[in-house]
Image (tube, rainbow, N blue to C red; front, side, top):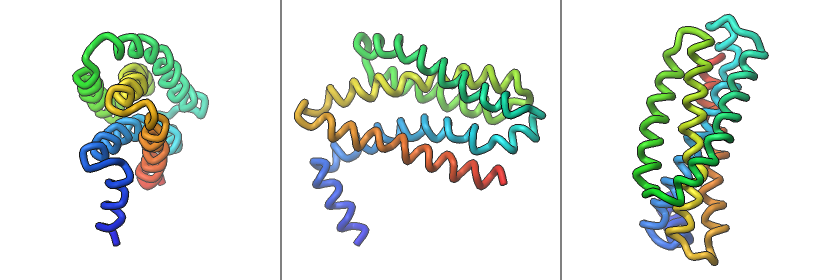
Length: 169
């Protein structure tokens, strides 16, 4: 049944290569939203470990989001002017480093700084992914394909809550 379902999905998406592209781009967006979900899901543990308040937890989420929103604008311009795949790959490497940094900080101030950096590098994903969809898929199917890809954000959020929820309890 699993193989049959996999074959049906691959056929519906237009073949193995297109399926890989869609899954990979969805995974990029999933990573971004999984990370965003971890702060809220780990709030109890963060408050205890770093001796911070609910306001501080809210500040972590807010600052990351605001920095990401501001950084999306220059990344959108760059996505139109430079090679997108190397830029996305570089952002993912920096992103991974920022996530490791976030996981190892000993204080709230350093965590806030790490989250600012993380917000900046995660901002690259949205404009680059949208631009790559425009490069690789026909106009008549872009909305549907982008819908599949953007569903990765919701899957990532669920994974972030599930993984962190198990740690924080």
